[in-house]
Length: 417
Ligand code: EPZ
Image (cartoon, rainbow, N blue to C red):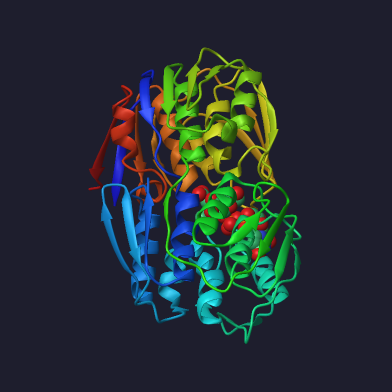
């Protein structure tokens, strides 16, 4: 297993270009299955999760080639609509394949995605959404089987604005007879990006980004070409890295309003933020503690909770973070405590008492965003840290250590002994 060796107390300074969004790319790749032919996606980051999605789609019969950050996806040969357990367990985001495969083949069978490190990952809202437009769904023996003689428009209400359920519903409804309205829809920018791509394929969707998405079904969709929106979570991670190290960092190729909740909170604690048209500059000194809740977009994103928590371990005063989205997303707390952080977790709330310094230590990564938090803490800590299991980090950040080196950070990747 590879690890990072980080020498801390180095300010990050300089410019870093943000890649296309992982959480936009995955549903966009799935959406190409709704038709036969060659679609092209630009700005696709080279991440483990993207490679896993490529492997699953190739197993289904797609032919996928990459040139730089461009993926060409030929879905002509796709004939299967079943995803085996070992691939589902690899990456639960394969659940995004349910809607497009049902839309194309009127049937789909996939192993239950199961939970992951941040909590149980139910799919009841995905199933409810597909049933509302005519699917018969059986969820037993560890498999979900959905079939529909025909898909017909309907009214879907999501009890929680689930990102994945909204995306599955949009994709399946795009080829249903009649109109579907998805109420209490997720409003994340990645939903809007999916609407753009589906409409380029010939779909008729409006309302993405609001809590009501209206889909007028069409008979057929065609391949399309699209550039993925920038990754707001990667951008936020680099902004927080600049803040925690007291540096001066410019993140380029971003859509600043996608990060409003994050930059607003940083300004509140005393970090200097300058928004450009397609960049954000962070200049940090010391910062205060703050109270925050993670919420569905446009609230503070759960995916930046761990990196923010890492930063707040060094704030003046106490902070309270409440994680309202996932049940078990404080795995990074024990590891940060090994570095001298003072944090108490009570249920879904973490109470962080700021300390003047963290100390480098050997730590272990348990999930993607906890891994980012460990890197940020190590960059600020006194002394050296060894961060194990960095494959989790490679799922969502492309060559993170190389880009941090580009900002002056002292971090190297090596095979663990
Ligand atoms: C997407 O996951 C993202 N993943 C996650 O990013 C992100 O944290 C999450 O949205 C929330 O923003 C991708 O886009 C690939 P949800 P998703 O359905 O769609 C409950 C990362 O680090 N729920 O909005 O799975 C669920 O238990 C990843 O990049 C149900 O109860 O998230 C959770 O508590 C992690 N029933 C909440 O909703 C359902 O049927 C949010 O889930 C579905 C979800």
